[in-house]
Structures are given as structure tokens and as C-alpha cells.
View: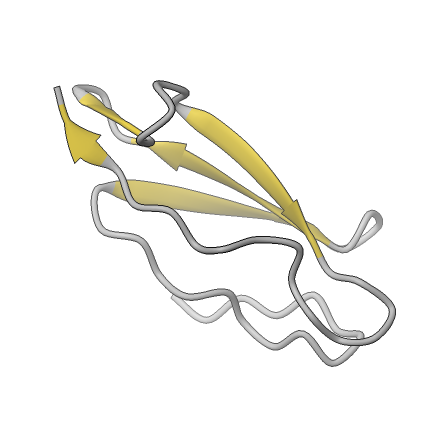
Length: 66
């Protein structure tokens, strides 16, 4: 999957065991871990934003099996 929100951020890294949903209006990507997986903090869904300087606002997490 190649997603790009513009603004110079480019596509966010792909995360195994997750799906990504792009929102061009807010220049964000929402990543949802598949059923049976969670981010290390226990959440299943996280939204990341593209800053005006062209950087993403995150340290890319991963989805761990429960």
C-alpha cells in the first residue's frame, strides 16, 4: 500500500498486522491493529499527523499479538 498525504511527509512506514486509513483533509493516517493485536501501550488505533515541515509526528510503533 502506498499512501501519501502530501506536505512532504511521504508515505508512513507500513506496520505488520495493521491497516492504515488516510485522511487528506487533516493530513493524517490512522493505523488500526488487526483483531488480536495491540500497540505496545495497549491501544488498537492510533492517528498520526503530517507536520508542515514534512515530518510525521511519531516514532513508528508496531502491533504485538495478545
